[in-house]
Length: 303
Ligand SMILES: Nc1ncnc2c1ncn2[C@@H]1O[C@H](COP(=O)(O)OP(=O)(O)OP(=O)(O)O)[C@@H](O)[C@H]1O
Ligand SMILES: [Mg+2]
Image (cartoon, rainbow, N blue to C red; front, side):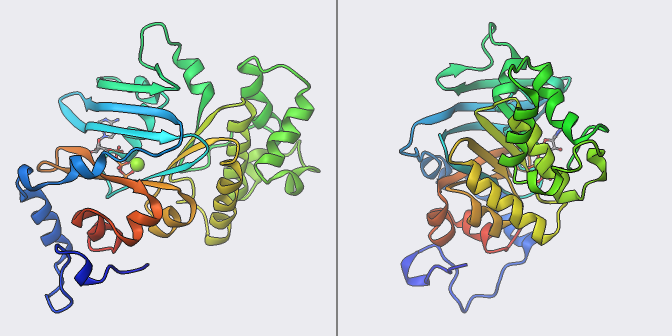
């Protein structure tokens, strides 16, 4: 990862100063006065492409506890947007806001708006089931149904009323998920008999079979070995020509490899809620971050 030369940035630590410990960095971040925080300014980046999602002042509470605060950002069509930040900063919560998965958690309260193609997905007349069909999700741990490979792909499509020849749909989805060649002779075998990486691609095929527009991925490679991870990353780059992808990842190299845009979040304000600190094109975020805290995070000083 390219380091920013000290002369280019006033706020950068000089090479001679002793490195801060992770604890010191976290304490400094938590005690910085709001007035000196540039996050709102640096977070106001707008991608030039058409927006699939427009979030405005989005906040979420689990009961009394606020998990995300005032997030405003747009996610562009046919691009990979990565959400990064330390554990507990609200990445998964934010991701789940995008397809109303948080509705399923009791005691959740949401403020602000999430527009999907200019439509407020939390509006009263919107059917959350239809939202989740168009905005699919792939989870951290591959979770195939205890059914055959074929049924794993066909089941959701049938439930969602997808018409057409099921054999063709299953083949097309498995091909799109780069799994067809490995399973075409074993479609009647259990999905659970596949390797972890294959199971994750099966889950991607299952998500694709309902013909979504967006795929949300919450750390889709964290349970996979490096080779299976690279396969999923290649697949993400292929899929993005047809889909919009939002991915949560803890792996900085992965964010740098697969995403076009990166959003950095931090749970601050004394550990209370996740804020968007900086958002921008991935190459810029990784080579010349605008905020000291982004730099601290991506260079591994905390998190
Ligand atoms: N179902 C829930 N009920 C109550 N609090 C929750 C729930 N899910 C998450 N939280 C809290 O909300 C905050 C944000 O959690 P979230 O899972 O979104 O973080 P994250 O950035 O995805 O973390 P990680 O990197 O560890 O997955 C945390 O403080 C967490 O404890
Ligand atoms: Mg998470």
